[in-house]
Length: 134
Image (cartoon, rainbow, N blue to C red; front, side, top):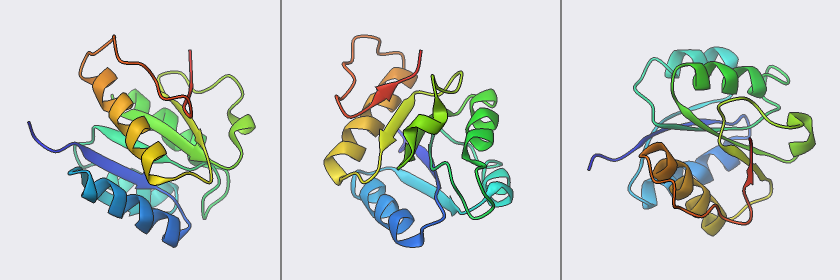
């Protein structure tokens, strides 16, 4: 099985680099780090399986817009934010949201869940740290 292609949408470079290291350590392929809407649009030209998306980025509260756009392209989206209430009941098509700060085990379990659901595994149990969207 090929490594999943994962986009990181995060403007805090240390957080983004930590996510990138976690994903690489798990055998996934981070396709890039997008700190804003324009960068995310450019990197979304790559084939993507999953995107980890923060809400407040360099250009403001553009994470929800990015998430909607990626979902419309068939990309699985996990939001990772310190402000999950901004998402209300969620974004149609997105998997769910993790609340920052988070750790490697939480990221690993949420990414594994999202990718297993994407692959058609409906029996997988979501990790307790992941708030699912309907």
